[in-house]
Amino acid sequence: MVRMLLNLAAYHFVRIDEPAALAETLHGRAAALGLRGTILVAGEGINLFLAGDEPQVRSFLDTLRADPRLGSIRVKESWSRAQPFARLKAKVKPEIIAFRRDGASPLDARAPTVAPRTLARWIERGADDNGRQLVLLDTRNREEVAHGTFAGALALPIDNFTELPEALAPHREALRDATVVSFCTGGIRCEKAALWLQGDGMDNVLQLDGGILGYFEQVGGAGYEGRCFVFDERVALDPALMPLVDAP
Image (cartoon, rainbow, N blue to C red; front, side, top):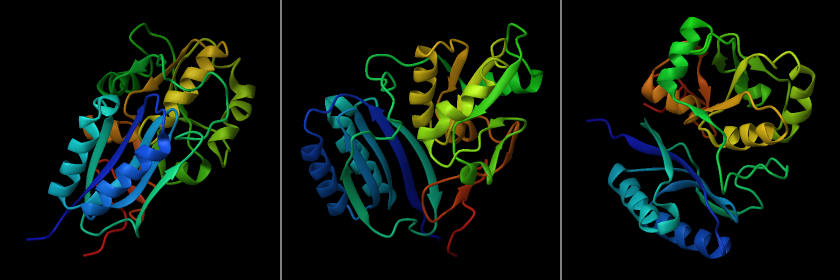
């Protein structure tokens, strides 16, 4: 029987008063369970990518959810035969995903969302339920987009997430009468981008709940071309959440 490792991608926006203490606690627990990956903690929340044997990963999840601040953490699961991380790291950062814009941290409210199954229906129709033109906005960088994206998506020539507002600016007038659905790998960048754009006057922007990985999980590859880049040695996942690179 082939040994499979459970890969965990999770994030949660919540106020963390002592991020260094939480990072140390979680690193200790993950290390004790033999997990590898990255744990990022900031005053605005937590973002992590971990892999290991399923019982140990489930145990770590139990630890997370036992913390009242993290009980509703959003989790994406996938599998691999090889360990995709070289070591375990825990870091304290100013943001769990760098955007460097005021009014973009969804601690008190989220931008409106669209569920994967609803989006799949809109993609098939080419319009939302009100008949309004649908535009899919890819908030990832050009390296990620090269591995795959939704068919016909608006992909911007950026190398860093912080460049998105300026790169989108020339398109905003043309998007005024459309329903714009922003998307990213697991949802975290869309949380910030959609919220900031909404606050900046672009009130026709929704975010794909759960990102591309959540879409793959619930819908598969309907309307998507290629794979989804991930930030580990698997490189990219197909709509069945199987890796591009995996050891036998």
